[in-house]
Amino acid sequence: MRYLFIALLSISLFSCNNSSTHTEKPRVAIAGLAIESSTFSPARSTAESFKARIGEDVFNYYPFLSEDSENRARANWFPTLRGHAIPGGMVTREAYDSLVNLTLEMLRENLPYDGLFFDIHGAMSVEGLDDPEGDFIIKVREVVGDETLISTSMDLHGNVSKRLAENTDLITCYRMAPHEDALESKQRALENLLDRLESGKGKPAYKAWIPVPILLPGEKTSTRIEPGKSLYAKVDPETKKEGVIDAAIWIGYAWADEPRNHAVVMVTGDDETTVKESAEFLAQSFWDVRHEFDFVAPVAYLDESLEMALNSEKKPFVISDMGDNPTAGGAGDVTWTLNELLQRPEFQSESGPELIYASIPGPDLIAKAKVAEIGTIIEGSVGAMVDDRFAPPLLLKGKLLALKEGDPDAKTEAVIQVGSIKVIVSEKRKPYHHEKDFTDLGLEPRRTDILVVKIGYLVPELYDLRGDWIMALTPGGVDQDLERLGHKRIIRPMYPLDKDMEDPDLSVRWISSEN
Image 1 (spheres, helix red, strand yellow):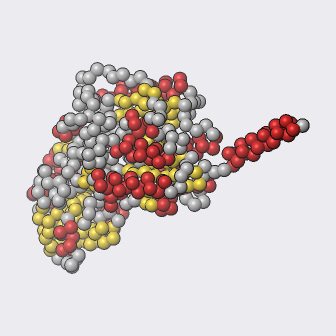
Image 2 (cartoon, rainbow, N blue to C red):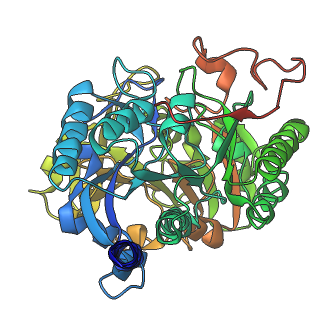
Image 3 (cartoon, rainbow, N blue to C red):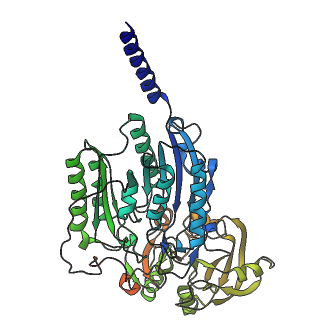
């Protein structure tokens, strides 16, 4: 009887423990730093650039984690630090260390964790440090331990080094460029994590990683057009296969010169054969269409672009000033294009074709605008405070049309009219992506003749309002002519820099945990 009682007690205790395992919510932390930073730009990004959310404020970034959401109720959450910066130059080492160390301190406060949602971009460059995201996740692992399940969400223009792949368990990235599915992808990464924790399946049995020696700019790989559209359409069906958790194709980031900068395919799952087949299928599909990638819109040098715009009956004619695109990592203050525009005879008179230029930072002119009356003539220096390699600062003199304070990025904005050109001058650099960015300044982008914006491919709002569009090959830290940039540290051969390279080995590399 005594042995029977012990046996029954053991079964009872096992049942209680097993039941507890299924009813207790998992403990899940959130952390991440996101920036796209060009090593070809003299600009530097600081800790302030990341506009870091701390603690409970992190939830405000994710609609799928709102207080009344289903996902919020599925776990006990421990948000630490999540920073997101406008693309720019390399991150200073001081900024990186301070943000990472604060994240690690906050993670230590609530150990242990069952899972961690690691929300990054994947194209952060840091002074004196190769592969910052790989370094970051290793430091996180040292704090949370090997058992914590880490799910990583990334931009498709990020880079997946081998050590990043080794130290994450689940990983995914956007499937659209422009990134209209950004929040959807982050939600998928989070829910994959929760599903694996709740089911008890934990870490995937297999992680397939295939480096693909292709390095292309985002302006050639948009999923709006072929072959990007069809290539990325192949991803989701692979994730529906039994034994596959997720699959992803990374284009990589073209404007940094590091060994990790190249395309990658990764597939995670529990069935070895299916994971292998899916990864190799996607990698080969990418390689097979490498010759078909072209710019998402017509491309020309600035003079030709302006002639097209001036002769077009479609308004507004949008010109992308691509070389200094702040949303790709440009300094945002190169004055070369604006200088060329101001010298054109067509725009010398107020009665000439209206051209809106967005934008150029100029704190000196902004200071003068703040004490001037609307309609008066003011003069001040703008641009080339960071990147003066292509043109010097401009002394801009014109009529003050508008002044607006309080923008979270630009701080203060002014519209200065010089001839028929209306220049948006900002206290700090800002990308102009939304119609409201213009209308709030009294400008009407839909009715202007020409709209010149520091951008690459157009974001949805600008794309929808365009009459016609061309992308101008202009100089800057994110020059679209990659051969002019002069990569020295990427792994060669690399398509299209080595156009006649032999077919690479696209067989699967199995990735296991570093530990």
